[in-house]
Image (cartoon, rainbow, N blue to C red; front, side):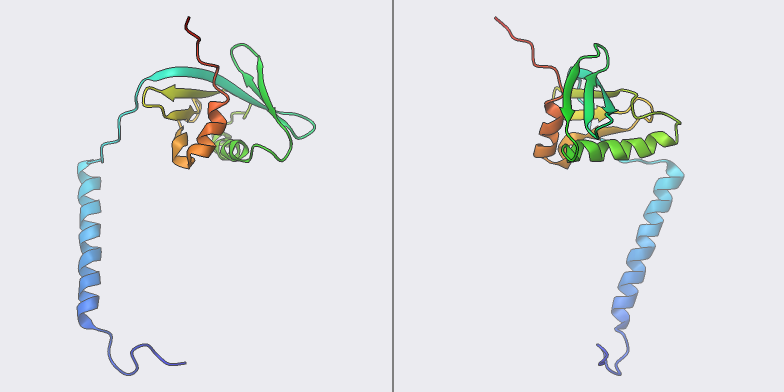
Length: 152
């Protein structure tokens, strides 16, 4: 096997540049930690449509989605379907284990003034911006919101 540099030494300039860059990054992180400086987050716009949703596993492997406040069945996901919703629930379920909470506790689904959809777990405080997972995946959750009010 041949070596990339043969018998030549590794370029000293590259080593100095990498060491300088690493030193700068460590310095900036240290300053940020010591001063408590944080990057500003984008503002979260007000909610315009919400629903408390509850997910319940059925004996046949399907997943029932209920409106927590009314008890109305919104939809049932057959076994093997609803992969994105099930994936989000697995992730949220892992987080809830540390809080000794069940997955059957409700989640807060909201459409925001900006048009974005968020899913918040009131138990863990985690809020997911669903558009970050793609428009198609966000659309799966849009179907769980109540129908918009009709105006005459």
